[in-house]
Length: 136
Image 1 (tube, rainbow, N blue to C red):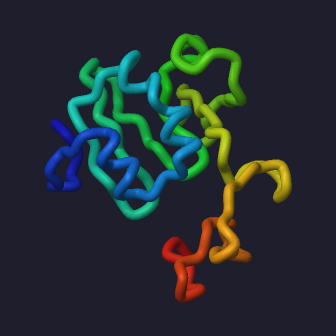
Image 2 (cartoon, rainbow, N blue to C red):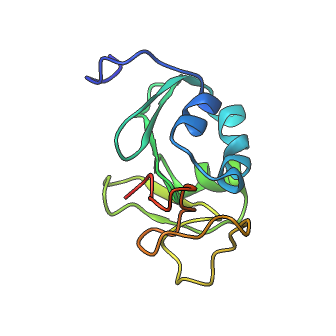
C-alpha cells in the first residue's frame, strides 16, 4: 500500500519543483530515477516521499539529503563516491547528502544569488522579493 497520505502520486521532477528543491540538488538527484524507478511521489510538509517500483520502503527526499537507501552500495552505485552516512533516523538504511544542504558549515555551501535577493538568516534559502522566507 502506498502510504496514508491519501495524495495523488506525481512525477519525481514535479515533486522536486513543488518542494522548491534547489536546482543544484535536482541535477544531483537525476540518476536516482534512472537507477530506482518510481511509482510516483507525494510532497509532504518536510520532505518528498519517493515510492520505489521495487518492494523496498519509500525514500525520503529532504532539502539537503535523501534518506532510506537500502545499503551504502546502493548509494555509490547511483551517485558514485559522494558524501553519505548510515541513517540515524531509519535504522539499517543509508543517507546521501546533497551538494546544497544545511548540514555543512555556512560558507561551505555554494549558493547562487541575484543582487535582488538575500538569504534567510535562519535557513539560507533565498528570500522572496518581499523579504519573507517561504520555508521558515
